[in-house]
Every structure is written in structure tokens, then in C-alpha cells.
Image (cartoon, rainbow, N blue to C red):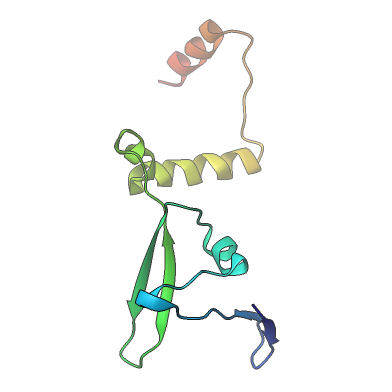
Length: 107
């Protein structure tokens, strides 16, 4: 495996190479697997553009009982909560009862 940095534009690209083996098998270089955030058992998606460029994307399978977390509405709430935390928009409570009292007051 070789790694090459291409500075032909403003960004730095890392290029890795692999060899096609029998039966169309290719061992994915470690750098590529890490960049795709995949591990053994994950799926890969190949998008082939009209100009012949192939874009490879790692696909991690999510168990059905956890799929709700990845729905767009839930993820929007996660982004909102993360922004509130970053802004310091937190309130701490001594007990669950005091938290529920505060929520009742907001209504």
C-alpha cells in the first residue's frame, strides 16, 4: 500500500492503492477503512457517476430497535440539544421532583 498526498487543489488528499484479486476481491487498505469508519461486517456502497468516477461509502447496519435514533426528527433534536449544551443552556436539579416542578412551571 502506498500513500500519496496530492496538493493539486486547496485540500490535501490521501491516496491509497489496492490490487484486484481473483473473483473481483479487493482488500481495503486500513487508511481507507478508517476514513470510511467501517469495520468487519459493515456494508459498502458504490456510487458510479456518469463520468466513471466511483464514490465509495461505508454503510453501518443499525439494529431495528435502534433505528428511531437515526430518524431525521430525532437527529434534529440531538443537534438542537448539542447547540444548547454548547451555549451553556443547562439547568441542574437536585432531584427528579425539582426537575418536574420546573417543567410544570414552564407550561
